[in-house]
Amino acid sequence: MGCYTRFGVIPVQENTGLAPMTTLGVGGPARRFVEAWSEDAVVEAIGMAEDAGWPLLVLGGGSNMLVSDEGFDGLVLRAAVGGVTFTESVGGQTRVTAGAGVDWDPLVAECVRRGLGGIECLTGIPGWVGGTPIQNVGAYGQEVSDVIDSVRAYDRQRGEVVELAAGDCGFAYRTSAFNTTARGRYVVLSVTYVLEANPSPTIGYPDLARAFKGRAVPPSLAEVRDAVRRIRASKAMLLVGGDADARSAGSFFKNPVVDESAARGVDAAAGTACPRYPADGGVKLPAAWLIERAGFRKGTRRGAVGLSSKHTLALVNRGGATASDVLGLAEEIQDGVEARFGVRLRPEPTFVGFTDDVMERFGAVSAVPSVQGPR
Image (cartoon, rainbow, N blue to C red; front, side, top):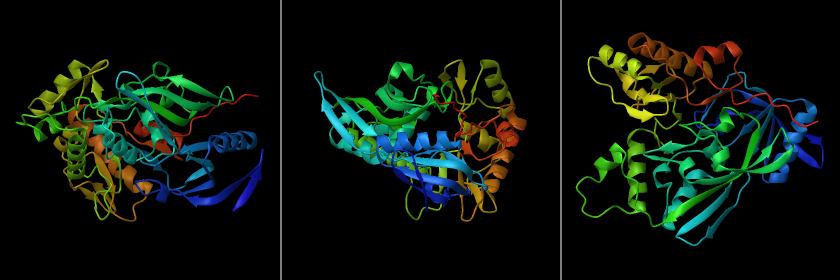
């Protein structure tokens, strides 16, 4: 272990394996690694990287990331800021503020236990609180943007901690300003959500509607959470020990948003109507539907990597897989879907340590954008 002194002494680990810190479990080492448990330590580590001219990767729960086999030749900062506070207000709402390093699913469970609704359908999603606004995490009819009040973050351009209102975060389907227009500028320190006390549960999503079909009494928040977890487990979208399908990055491909003309083309190629949902600027098509009808079935395997036996959206590390193995199957799927339907799928996980030509070929987003700090 080496150390670098700036305002104090932060222990910097060298050549630290990143694969165990990601849910997919592949990738090479970090040249340098720091785990920061407080806001001050996060800020200090960022300053250390900027002063030394090291590329900086901010790592949370590692649930939405693909690391290259070469690893990352810079500083990996794990922003493990903890702490959760619940503040009740007039009108049946509660403000829940959680540090970026708080484990997301236990937070959902605690909110449901307290009768607070708005994120019960987001149970079972791996990762930390800090990643939820970045991806605008959503599932089963809910998105965090519906309940986020503000995000506390370190602004690398201004060199100070700021509070961003939800309206300043640029939320859209699975995106935000944090991973688009302001990508890399902010490091999330904590998030404040506003949740309703004992609301009507959200069960409009087809899978949930079927689960509670015929019930005379609306389900409780706890029942909805349990149902979501069962559905996720049936699709290998729940990290469960001993489940051979669990070592994945979740949904590897985004549901594509296309115009109506392209959607009609998909229908024609498939010989049947593709399910579609309203989306900003067009219609959203289910990537899993496209993948299956392009000939990639559940359980498809290419050596050490394959598709989940429960859900075609998940690329699974069957044991000993490399990042190159994952990319090989991912590109085969992209090419197959495009050849059949004329739609190019884009990966949902961010990529770390890959060359520009790989990023361009896959239409991937880098987890390590270049940011110029204050001078």
